[in-house]
Length: 415
Ligand code: HEM
Image (cartoon, rainbow, N blue to C red; front, side, top):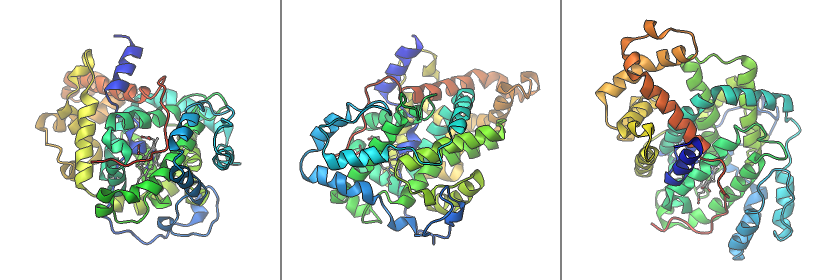
């Protein structure tokens, strides 16, 4: 099977990659006092307001009006025509929405095109590792972010996880493309549409009796929630690459951060909450992400769906990557506590293999260790690890080339 057919099958059959971006979570969480200073943000200053009480005023009312006026389907039809960053917006969009989108699509003054060029190099060199970390660090982590898990489970997309994951994979794919933020790229489109989708969720999810029963906030997807999910993506990815000792030059690491800072801005996260360095990102993540991770019944079900979806790869050598291997990978990446929350069974062989051989595997791939000097078990499982990297990269790639349009939801998950 050629790569393109595989990609299409993956996309049709369900995709785990980039999952993190959109995913799942809810906290049983007591929220910590907000003490992170806006001095560490890309804005360098700000009111310092607790982001738990801030949403997206500019987008939320406009999208609520679209939904309440019964025009969601018409608007989504027009949104589908907008596929490239630099393209004109449809004149048939309601003028208020159109004006908002014109503003929202502008790149911030702090955009650094040089850094974005360097990010392209990084994505090309590290694409294989990014697939695994987006899918099995970020994606699986999203299932233990209680608010995200609940929002995802009870929103429209929760009724069709394959579709949802494919849409999410689009963001993970787009941000890694060489023209992501250029006029002929698609990342700005994806972010602005996602911003509209989130505004729609804020308006209609509170009407879901299922969500209302379990939610610990009146309106979902606050700026704090957004930062939590954001950290489950670039911050968690970079923490894993560092842990695995992947050699990354400082300018590339910085460039990768920059591409995600821009993503945050384009998703409507205020500049005063976006960390200006990895040190600030790690300190903010320790405050907002780590303490709120917790199991929920919704997250446990989502994690199981994700592990199953990731194994639906018809034909080809990828069929050897089984649910136990993916479960063991998740346990290795996220640790015993989270794996146990998610009711992922222990896999004595594969758990041992990941603990013993994953880091040496990276070292061998990077030319820093010879296979002969690596632990003996690596020689037996090298092919499986290699397959795993390819599978995860394909999952992210499945966000490409498809007529995917992220839409404003007008219903919740009926179940
Ligand atoms: C939709 C990404 C934060 C809940 C989406 C979509 C993307 C995305 C790409 C479109 C996919 C689709 O329509 O199925 C992101 C990113 C985030 C983020 C990159 C942060 C950096 C959050 C948070 C929550 C959340 C914090 C909840 C607490 C949802 C929901 C949908 C959605 C419920 C719509 C599902 C539907 O009804 O179809 N997000 N998201 N997201 N996101 Fe997010």
